[in-house]
Length: 221
Image (cartoon, rainbow, N blue to C red; front, side, top):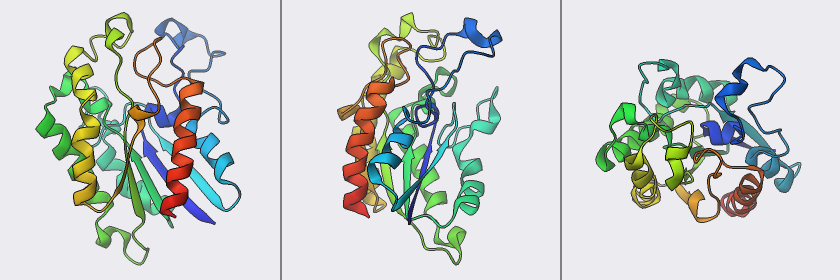
C-alpha cells in the first residue's frame, strides 16, 4: 500500500465555508465538511485500496510563521512530529500558504517564498528521515482568496493585499518546487474558494481538486 501524507491547513481539514462565527455556541453545527466531501476523502476513494491517504490538515497552519495569538499553528514546528508519527510515507503533499498572507505577518513576495523554502528544508532533510526513505513531494499552491473578502468574517484577518498576493502564489511556488526537485500543481487552476467566506472550498471544489490530484498522484507513484 502506497502511503500519502497530506500536510495542509483548513482547506485540507475541510472547513465548511458556510460556517459563521455566530454558530460557535451551537455544538450541533459542524464547522467541517464530512470525510466523503473533503478532497482527501474523495482522493482516497478515487485512488482505491492500493493507496492510503493520511489527512493532516490544521486550520490556521502557516509554513513557518508563529502567530502571536495562535503560536501552535507553525507548520515547521509540527513537521518533524508529523513525519515521525506517520512514516513510512511514499508521497508528501504540501498545500500551505494562505495563512502566511494574514495581515499579522505583513507578507511580501520574497518573504512568502522564503517561508515555504524553509519548510521544505525541514521536510526534505534526509537526516530527519534517518532510516526511512525520503518521500516524493508534491507542492500544491492553494486556491486564491476571493475579491469579496470584505464581505467575509475573515476581513481584517486578510485584506486586499492578501488577495493580490494569493494570486501570485503559483508563480512564486513553481520555480521553488523545481529547485527542490518537487512535483507541482496549482489548485487555483482547477478549484476556487466559496463566495460565502472567500477562503474555503465548498464540496464541489473539493471534488474538482481531488479529481485532478488523483491523476497527478498516479503519475508520480
